[in-house]
Image (cartoon, rainbow, N blue to C red):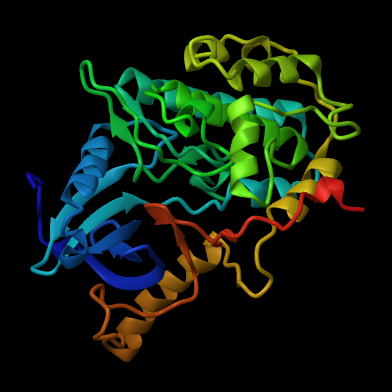
Length: 360
């Protein structure tokens, strides 16, 4: 692989914060600036036969510079590992922040989708298709009330070549476009479909498609069969529903592009309502996207505070304890990672047994 490499001498106090598939993610501090970053540690043995996948991900990340997309800051390697130094995003997951709010409106959802559309339009203009847009890959940059949203996890992304056709079935069930399931050639329009699904969930708290049986779930998606159920959609504007319908259009040729979606009045106009829908939406999110109760959550300030304590502690107590079995040599912790960057809770991967909106 043709990569820009450097030794890790500029980083210290490595701390394991989670594991994803065949890699490990650690929290690290840059010595000179004391700035925190997330490092994805990938064993070279695990890359055997998958070199093209990691090369594709790195190629995509190297091209991206957008305020709403997680940045790849550096790459270096040891004899046994490849290390991707990623921008640290510590504001938490999208759904968690919505549930924590006491007030949440259509306008809030519109502003979130506006940021996502702007970032995905940038990707599409660069010839990049994400192919796995979903709420779990949308994280807040910081804990600030007005924090921006960030798109992460480019493991399935693809750079469109001149005349190339994408046909690989990939993505996450429930967010994948009909043409992907139909095993037809597809384009960047698949990302626009996913944004439509995310918009739907942001306004009601439950997914537009669901069935415990994957075959039946896929059948719903293939037919683009979804409804704006009462009473959950009674207080949602017709403009919001129109916006969703244009993105969740079965025919990819008729589906809104990001540029068209950005011009919709629900995004750029004043049709998004200011009525508080927090109670209904947050209740449905908690029921339909619940995390396992035994998983412990950590907020970002606690993680950062702990790093500062480690820094003070080493000056008073000497070198920190090393975990020799870890390729990243750090202190084990129960915080989790998500995608390429730090997240503060890991979402429950098993879909709920039944949609809460159908349960009394």
